[in-house]
Image 1 (cartoon, rainbow, N blue to C red):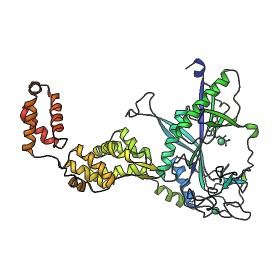
Image 2: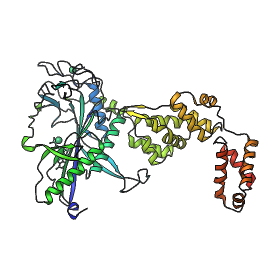
Image 3: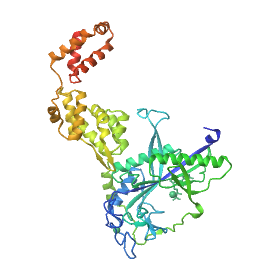
Image 4: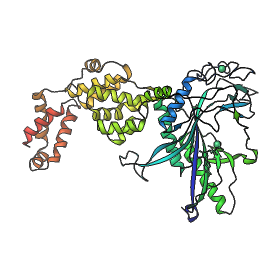
Length: 490
Ligand code: ADP
Ligand code: MG
Ligand code: ZN
């Protein structure tokens, strides 16, 4: 990197909009289901007919409070809903109900882990922790959606209008595109584990605006920022921010000034582009919504929310490492999704050896798992995995055969015992038969046998391998080891 590039530091603050997973909308009883025909989940309230009154959805409040508590925010009660006024076809009321100067929560934090530079992906190396401030979490409603793919004209679909959102505003504590992507991943995982959001960037239920500025190293005042709008993947967030940092560095080092503006991300060109400048920025004329009373969070309500807080991803990872003795990397992989974590934990508990269950799930099962939002498709049950590994423990089948049985089980959903019987699969534990094979192998390899007897114990692996090859992996490793030890006098 050049001298110039090192003279500046980047400052990034993210605003995240996350859709709350309630069944009905924030202020009416219309369904929030995704993918229905346009304008079929609408009523006078969410299409903004004059005189229709909003009634706040208590479940949305519970989910919003759960989010704020998980982020260590302080709750404000009462808080207030405000009207954010602007004109756009997808907003028939002419205002969005949001919270402004009296949000229901503020001053929290999110701890992100930064992998050491050039650490391998699968590394168990301890990661540095960085705490990012959360300015506030507030509730608001979503707008509708303009659809431009319906023939000659565009239509407005108001199914999404009035769907409850939380906006999570972060402090400008992030210093690179990589940190920003890490913050978003961590936040997304927390919301998914909380069950309040499906974490789906492509469908727009988790959206991010990134504010990016740079300043000379050592400067404490914030520089002028550009706001990057609605980037719908973690990878693009990182790329867009890094591009924007370099763009601003080039502007400043050539003597120019960064202008405050909203910019978009062009995926194809890999560049950001100007959408509108500050002069065109909105003045939203916020004022308290006279149709909604102040929101009071009673102690009993907050206590109920606290009592239903699920275990968060980081706590789960720590517990898997401490109590179940799996590696930090394995814990990371197995806590990527709440359903996968629950599946692993159940199988490990049923079977008893968490490390082996973790290895088996990682090496065999995970490649067959697909997740979509909060749902996960896992082709086998925890009971089946525990039973399968039990067959290995009891010497019925070998570890190698277990993989074969798993592959069948993933397709047929049969019990492992059924598959083992159907395939005529039995681990060979007949001591006499195995001893005979071992003797043949030892006789066929006199040089190696002599070297092993002379102390080259590593050659044991060679003999075990030969026997396994001969028996196509069906010999019981324990019996093979015993037989070889006897023959080779080690
Ligand atoms: P708005 O974008 O609605 O005007 P704010 O001014 O409160 O709202 O800022 C929103 C976000 O922008 C926050 O996440 C904050 O951390 C971030 N931010 C504010 N100023 C800067 C800056 N100079 N550089 C980078 N991020 C900034
Ligand atoms: Mg903003
Ligand atoms: Zn409605």
